[in-house]
Image 1 (tube, rainbow, N blue to C red):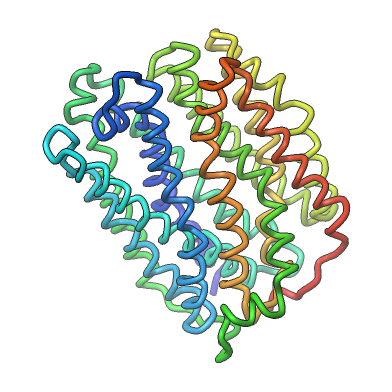
Image 2 (image 1 turned 60 degrees about the vertical axis):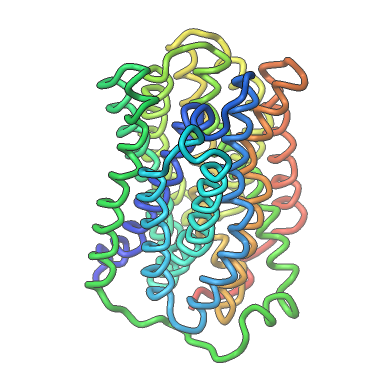
Length: 412
């Protein structure tokens, strides 16, 4: 199979998966008003981010379900099923009646759909990374794997772009009444494209085992799972701070328009897309650990200054802060995608990596918007989320320094 086809299979599903997740984050303020109405807008926003976090909290369970499918039935099978498991809830969210129509059943249904989406993402992202690494040339593992991550960023960027177009075309009343639904329904077309591409390309999985992957992971590979989870905390919190929560932060804390927030986020995403392949290339040449230690240490050092730039109230300065985040987070992600795969045994790779990665993202990354909003509401300090970011990256940095010495397992 050609190198381009390998990348296309791994990339396309992540475009759709992360588009759907991003759209919810970008319209969290509107969704909070419609599905979690409260006298205090902050309460509505926190409740909306709570529903966002619910999708992440079930990701470890989704990782076990889809990881088992990937280990026993093949990586491609897991990726194909996960695409459709994301598409259906996304379209349904676009036509879901609000609290005004259904009352308490509206937020219950919304959270239920978010949970299904979270299960889907729990299997998609890690399965695609494993597929890419296992089919990559030996000296280009990180550079190949990074395109799965790149596809996810494209999906988030697409969500940001669609949100920007909708926000510019419609006034605030139209956006609240029906405009917010357009990006969710559009997600169905993105999903169909991904499904058609994957179903039309058939590949063999390098390894197919008959053991019980879940039992094997928790019996013989607990330390590998624990290390991977700790390693991903810093990058996860950094990403969801800079590219999901920041949109609401710019609008609600800096009091700038939705259009400005999405413009800044979209430009920073373009920078991130350029940084990712470069960081992966450096990782293949100089080693994963050197690049990751540098990136994690940089997030520890620059989190507070970058947040001060975000809180400046000036669009150009805010953009500079977002670009600073994009560069550092991109450097962290470039080598991590391959290292995640390389640190766990091939026979339980889908199950083990999916659980470890999604436990980290679910407990720390996906809850970051909720934690950040809560920290500001409790402390009154608009820079408070930066301290959460520093703590998260200290955990990953210490893990890198003291618990990661070499790549333990071969990729095939």
